Amino acid sequence: MQTNYSLLAILIGLAVRLALPVMVTLIAVYLLRKLDAHWQKQAEAELARPAEEVEAWDLKNCPIEKRSPNPETTSSLPCWQTHRLPNGYLNDECLSCEVFRDASAPATHAHAHA
Image 1 (cartoon, helix red, strand yellow):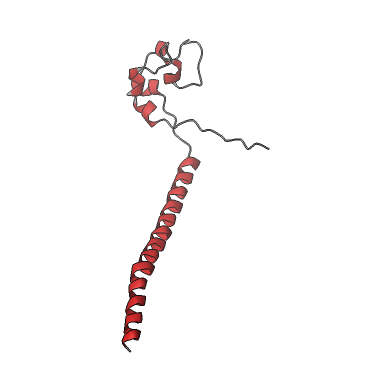
Image 2 (cartoon, rainbow, N blue to C red):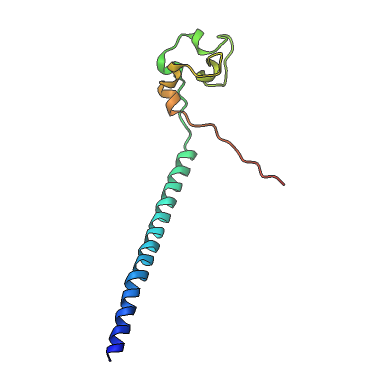
């Protein structure tokens, strides 16, 4: 009879020591997957929404001669690309610009190799 109680105590100890952490881990995995799916839907909805294009020169009321290297031509590049320093660095003025900080990174597409 004492052996049965000892065996029962060992089994309960193993269940608490092993099964309980496994169950908690499985619940955490389930909740994190649901959260990830929710964030994925939010990101897809945000990508589907057209972004409002705000030009930095409109926001800062820049004169026409500062808008592009050649005022007669219009560039499809953002102003911080057209006004880089000779060494390729960005102007400090651009780095602190709200439009530059809020701009999305250019999309890159990975091509599958056949």
